Image (cartoon, rainbow, N blue to C red; front, side):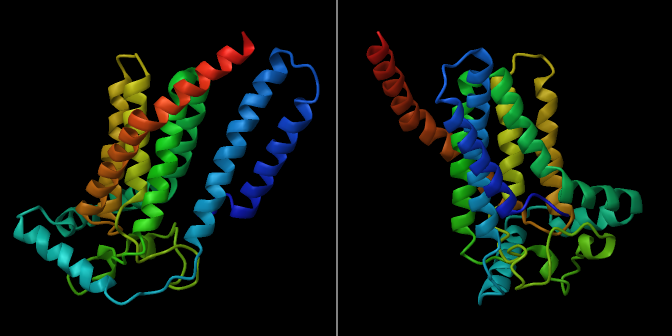
Length: 271
């Protein structure tokens, strides 16, 4: 799949920064204020996206211990009597249409859903936008840091019976191992699930609609997809959700206080 590259995101960020700088040189009307607000956030998100893409293209290959840790996770889950990812994948593979749609969901859904959620939140619920934006940044940074503890995904254990659905059905988000397209030995934690949890929980928390609970399905489907495709262990999904909870807690306990203090100081200076 072709997503926005890091250099394209950098150009977008720079363009937004220039736009904000130019507009601030003139007296601002309502339209200009809206453009400045959107461009400021787009510059920040584009900058974070750039860092994420650059980190994902580091030339990381199969580090020692990745396969061993994968087997350890598999053994631990068996010891805990957790239903195996393999049983789910084998069920999906019985139905060609289900396997193809699951593989497509894994490859396509996570980035557009996250972008759509952030745009909706900024447009409709700006009062809580910063909380979820900050949590997204902290969650992603944590995932990129933890990935240096190498863990192979289930699809790298064909001797157990796992199949790489992307190899069989296409739409792979990865290139050959070691090419720098994306890190394939960083199953723990699942950034797909982390972003899906952010979207689902964010909609439930911000919206007042009785239909908001329907969007929890996005998280459920993502956990299902990353597991059935052989890209993640159950523990990868659990770890991502825990990291999101920690990020939200950090924002609630420390960053919210800083924002409140900043707003109070701004109000005093303008009064």
